[in-house]
Length: 208
Image 1 (cartoon, rainbow, N blue to C red):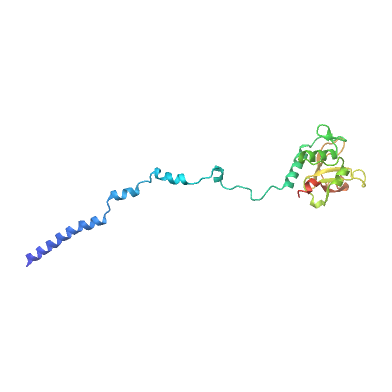
Image 2: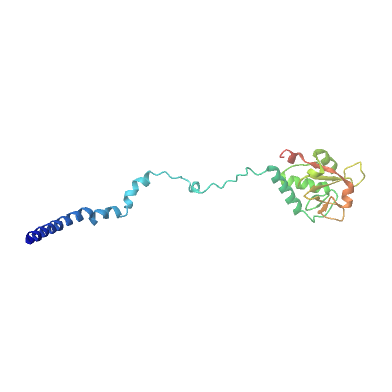
């Protein structure tokens, strides 16, 4: 009986050894079968897809939209900036009665007329009294750069002086004989006493 048990045990062990390699083969995938999946995709195979892709003709179309979301530039502000810029460039041009250009010098109305004509192409009347009548009345608290400021320097019944408003009560003008184009303040005693009002020329008023 012991011999028969040993023979049966040996036979069972041999049978298990025969089955084990078969199961191991089923669980193992051959390396050559995986290799094609891991290999990089050939560039040649991408060519048809790239050929069918649609790209913008203009490379700039690929850039982010950086347009100004605040809208168009305020035309009135642009005109005012041009007026002030030219007026400030003419500082120190000497006063000359009846003067109309930097080469000869300016009187007050000649200075204002030159700046408006050359900065924004607007032709104003030839003297300060007529310039006063040509503009739209502006309250002192509503004055903006480029508005005209007028004064009674020869009696309160007539307009006799004009300048271009800048900001914070300042204005630029051609004052009088012996002086040059300069910046003054409406708060100065002389000008405060003689201030006659402000006007906004039609060319600016129509643009806001």
